Structure formats: C-alpha cells, structure tokens
Length: 360
Image (cartoon, rainbow, N blue to C red; front, side, top):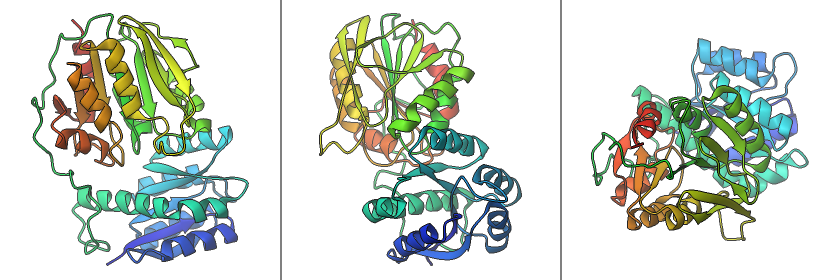
C-alpha cells in the first residue's frame, strides 16, 4: 500500500502543486488537505496519515501551533515546508522544537517553480521519513507493503572499534568536526548540550541547511548551549571552546596548522551537491589536525562524509558515527560504518559526553 499524506497549506494553488508532485510517485497517496492549522489537527486525528506536509503561516491556527497539537493528540511525522527567509528559518526552527521531524525549503517568490525543480527530492524525503516512523512503531498499516527506502547500508554494519567510545586521545590543540543532514537541527544541540562548559577544543559544524537558516540556527544554539556557538565568517580563526556553524550554501575548509586553525569559506561549484560538504570539512581538517582530530557523522540522507572520513582515518584521526536506532535517517552514518571507517557507533544521547571524555 502507498504512503498516505496529508497536505496542509493555506494556498489552494500550492496545495494543488503539491498534490501533482506527490501524484507523480505511485508510492505516495494524498488522502486529505487542510487550509489552516485547526483543520490540520482534526484531519490528522481523523485520517491518521503516515506523514504530513505543513506550512507555517496560516489563518485561524499557524503551523507551529498545529504541530504541537498533533504531536500531543495523534503523533504523526511532520515535514515543514519553509520559506527561504530569516523569518521562515526562525519559524521552522520553532516548528522543529515543537515536534516536526524535518523541513524542506520552498522559494517564497515562486514556490510552484521550486516544486517543479525539486519534486523528486521532496517525494524521496517524504518516503524516507514516513517509512522510518513506521519501522520505529512496528506499524503494519498503510505503507507496510511499500518498497523499503532504507539505504543499502541500513543494517548496523561491522565497525573498526566497538560501540563504546575511546577516551583520552584528543589534546587541547585538537579539533572536532561534526557533520549532519536530515535530523541534524535536533541532533546537533543534543550533542553540544552534553559538553562540559569549559570544553577547550574548537568545533566545526557542517549541517546541510539553506543559507538563511544557519545564522538563526547558530544563534539558537548559542542561547542554549554550554559553549559559545557562532555562524562562521570567511577566514575565521578558531578559538578554544567555540563551535562554528559553516554558513549554508557555502563550503568550509580548514587551514592553518595543528593547534592554530582557520576556517576558509568558498562558493560551491555546479557539481558539488552537498552545501556545505561534510566530506570537504573532514578531509581539510585531516590535513591540518592529523591524528588530533575527531570527526563525528550524525543523522542524514545520502553518503556525504564517507569520503572525508576515509581521509581522516588515513591521517590516523578518529571517526564516530551515530547509530541507526537514534538517527532520523540512517544514511550518512551508515555509509561511514559500511565502509568500516567508524571507530565507534554511538547512540545520540551518548555522543556529547563521549566527546568530553575524549580529552586527555
């Protein structure tokens, strides 16, 4: 049976555009539409869809309030459709805090054109999130007969080390680089929040996220995390105990020398799909930090980070990956683990404390 969707948006034209995109995929079925948050709550509980796409700005009840009520009354995976603006970013991050599982950007100037160009990616994202939720709940309902969207490496592979993380290998001149994609906006704070307040090593974060989102994301982290967090600038000299979020839509490359690191930013070229690239951040960090580097791969679709992890391992650095059970999408961590590059595979809740324990 196909995956059942509920579309929530106050624009009739955009709902029609979404329905057309989803109708092009035989594995998806639109079972209902809602034009405001109140309708969304009622239809979510009545229709029990496998996943909901949700707008933010709507009359009667906004998307953030609807997410909270749906999460409370009839929990369902919710994918926010977000405007590529600072206000859209703030609202989307509020929705993720309220219980939404992920977001997908839409161009505020011409959202239908955005769908025409990225419809296949949107369908893939919807399928992955819905099927992941079904596997978690053991659901045998709608979608149970759908072809699995789990990446080939989704079973927990053999790794170089064990599930427990080694300790005492990172000096105060070392470096930590964290890569994440789908599910990262919740996973990254879960990691940083477990660090000690006096953590002395700089951290670089490569999170797949639009450019309008990374500034508000970094500010939220800075307001709530035990360490300082900022959006990086080009040529940024990395300070101890500070986390630097690479701006969305750009690449971050580590330069300098061991213990005196600098982060350079550059625009991607046409064939560089991941922006920022986790692999590029990892490989450039390996060149300057060598064996005094910890690279952490968190939840995300695709395989970004795998090639960079190979360079970290070749430089005798350390690679950790989030485990399947706690990943929203077990794609990026699975690619690293399948290639036998992960020294440790850890539940999300253990990674932050383990990073603190890595100091010698």
